[in-house]
Length: 205
Image (tube, rainbow, N blue to C red):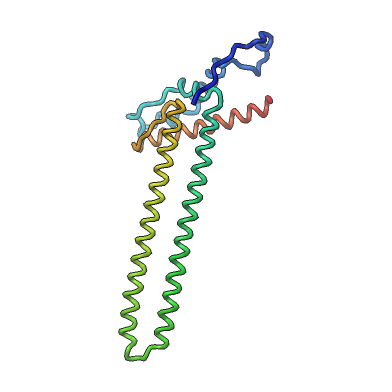
């Protein structure tokens, strides 16, 4: 990703407009906003051993709005992925519930047709069958949960890699819990700043 090179203002009279900022002024404003919003997240005791990102570098990366678009795109992909995985898990749960209900009704019908002296043997066999089905259900649920965790972990890695390549300070591939927490806080800061930028654009179109 490449960020636009600042272009000199061809009209000096525009400098008198308070709503038109130079890149350096806007970078300073972004950094001041980051400084103000980041203090609680970056000074918690749990993060003391984790390197703090350079907010000046972060402000520079945010300067032309490209990172805002990248973050928005990543969040949309994440939400779609989570929605899809949630739907898959609900579908599996529904299939398991239907399987157990079908087995229960089949067992009940078999007991009603069974002769009394054979009933204990039938019930024992049905109990073994039910236990086998429940074991299968637990295994399929475990495999689904593992799949969900792996896919979400991969999405985190994709986000880290994309933001690192975009030159966003503080982002790199890591599984360290403290560093992940720091990156989550950074993402939240960027989202808040994006909202402020959007509100500012609406106020001064």
